[in-house]
Structure formats: C-alpha cells, structure tokens
Length: 245
Image 1 (cartoon, rainbow, N blue to C red):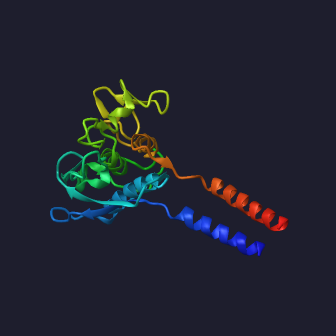
Image 2 (image 1 turned 30 degrees about the vertical axis):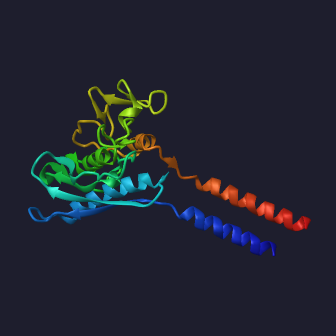
Image 3 (image 1 turned 30 degrees about the horizontal axis):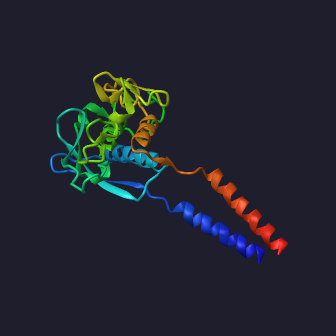
C-alpha cells in the first residue's frame, strides 16, 4: 500500500511538471525570387531554436505560435517587420509578438557568413555572422524594441513594456544594469543587440532573454532539483502517515 501511494504521487508530479507551454515559431521561406540553400535554412532554424529554447526557461500561460516568412529583399543585411500588425482584442489587452500576424524577415544573403556550427566567438567565422544577425533581428521582433509591445492598451494608462524598464540609458538599473544606446533604446552598448556587428563576431541570446523576461513579467520554470525535493518530501509524508495508522 505504501509503495502504491508513492508511485501515484511521483507519476502525478512528473505529469504536472512536463505540461509546460512553449513558444513555437513557424518558419517559411519565400523561394520566388531566391532559392534558399540547406545551409542557409539551417542557420535560420538554429536562430529560431535558440530563441525557443531561451523562452522555454520561463512559464508561459499557454503555448503560443506565430509564423515568420524569410525573404530575400536585396536591402540591408537583415531587416524585420510585419505585413499585418496586432488586431484589436478589447480595451486593456497586452500586445505581444505572438499576437502579431504576418511577421517577415528580409535578408540579403550574399553579404553574410552562413554557418550554424561555431559556438565560440570568432571560431571559423570569416564574415558578418548570419546566425548572430538573425538572432539580433529576432530579438527586436520578440520584444527588444520600444514602441512595439504595450500593456493596458486603450485605457489611458498604456505602458511600453520595454521602455518602462529603462531609466536614462540603463535597462533595469540596480538589477540587470544593461547599458542602452543613447537615443536608441532598441540597441545595447555591446553584445547581441548592439547596433553594429563586426566580422568574426558571434553573440548568444542569454542577456536579451533576461531583459525580455523582465519586460514581459515572465516567471522562471522551477529548477528540476526543486521538483525532486518536493517529490522526496511527499514520499516521506506518505510513509510517516502509513506507519502511524
């Protein structure tokens, strides 16, 4: 009887901890004017995976999915935007990236170094790193940009969730303390969201994800160790109650 109760408790805990919502970015490639190579698609998909994995460390209310169409525009190295913005969802709603429709990213493939594999800054990167550039533009699209995402829309108390974290030119002073570009709070001074990228550089998404989590008020997913301790505590209670019966 003791063993059966313990097994039920552990199974219930495992089911509960695995049912977490995720960010799902659906990629499409516009091949009308340009045929994407497998390597280029691999770089794009790696950048998408990096952001999805970063968001998976935080609790989302529900699984959110939205699409991005990658196009060869022949313009700047990488640009982003959307054909249709977020729809009106009632007074007081919060706009978020996954509420926008028609996301797209325009790329000029010929000016970039396409390689999804090097993990170390400067390791095998001989040009402007496409993976970093795409991570950067996805960072803007996902929230690292003032004037894109708001809380309490149409209430008279609308707040810009990104700009609201910045005092002067510092994001979250006393906490993350990220130095922002003067007059351009969508960019940081250095790192992934720096306004300039030099050849041979590669940057990860970690710092930008921490900034987004603060702006969107996201809660970290509990650590697995915490889950284990809860399970052990539950087992101990079951055993004690059984023996004292």
